[in-house]
Structures are given as C-alpha cells and as structure tokens.
Image (cartoon, rainbow, N blue to C red; front, side, top):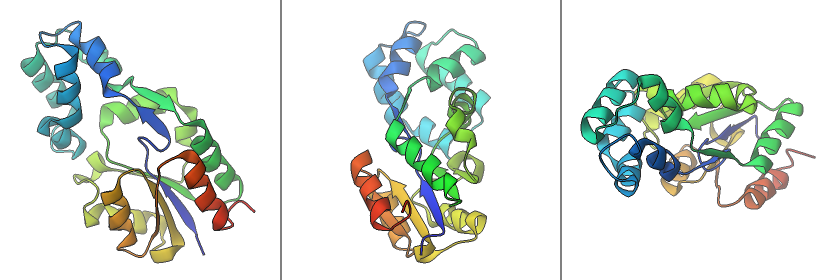
Amino acid sequence: MVKAVVFDLGKVLLDFDYSIAARKISQRARIRAQELTRFIGQDSLVVRYESGLVSSQEFYTRICALTGYGGTFQEFGELFADIFTPIAPMIELQAALRERKLPTYVFSNTNELVVDYIRRNYPFFANFDGYILSYEHRTMKPEARLYEVVERQSGRQGAEILYLDDRPENVAAGAARGWQAVLHESSAKSMAAVNQLGLLG
C-alpha cells in the first residue's frame, strides 16, 4: 500500500520554458536568445549548479563572463527563474492527496535561484511534507544516493512509495528500488494511475 507520494517538480507540477529566460537575459547580454536557450538547457555549468558544485553567486559571475550579461545578481535571479507555468491538475492532485493525510514530497534536479523564486511565487510549494533537491545534496537524479535521501526522509521504501517523474531514466531508477514509479506523460495519465491505486477513493 502506498504510504508516500513523490512528485518531480519540472514538467510535473510546473511546466517550464528556458527560452523565456533566454529572451530576457539576452537583452542585456552579448549573445542571442537562441544561443542562450541552448546554453541554459544543456551547458555543464548549469549541471554543476544543480549538482550544488557551484554557488548561486559563482553561477551568476560565470554567466556574466560567458554571456556579457550586465544586470545585477538580483535581476539575474528573477530573469533566470521566471520560466514557469503551473500545471493545475497536478497541483490539485497533490492537494487532494494531502487532504487524505497522505504524505507528499518534492524530488527534483534543481537549483537555489529557482527554488527561492518558486517559494516566493507559488504558494502550493509550501504544502509538502519534505523536499529532496539536488543542489542541497550535491548529486542529481538518477544517482542512487539521492533516492536513498527520499527513503530516509519519508521513512518509506519499495512499493510504499509512489513516484511521478517525466524522465524515463529517473523513473527507471525508482522502479529499480521497488518504488511504484510512473512516467508522467500527461496529467490525465498520472491521475489515472493514482486513481487505479485507490488513493483518492
């Protein structure tokens, strides 16, 4: 029986689009928005930042050096993180599970600037029992060490954990630990999986 539900953040609870940040940042930088979009989405510096290997200030300083961005740290933080659109059915699903006293957790590869922004702008984010965030643990999904943190924090393991994530490699890592891992392809499919387990009945 499921005793905890673990949600990925990006593309599950909040959709995001790096090109939004790239367009705004490029207005004060020396590289074009299209190039910035690729940089933010794929560059090893971003991976190191989300792995907690560089600080927010170091990340900003390096971005300025690489792109010629001329704004302040505070301005950059707002532009870099203002990329989200709430996925209302999934946020409502989490609220419904919480009403039924089922513990819920956020489990995300993310960074400090983004999490600070989400905490300020999206009230639903405060309504989880715990947060397992890559940058705080200096490792990223699908590394097993981060999944172990989820188990320790929730006090659950194996089939007691229902896990929703949009990336197949992350889902596979959860399934390998015996979690009930669901690939999030749409709100309807994920909600159907939750209903099939009888968690809302």
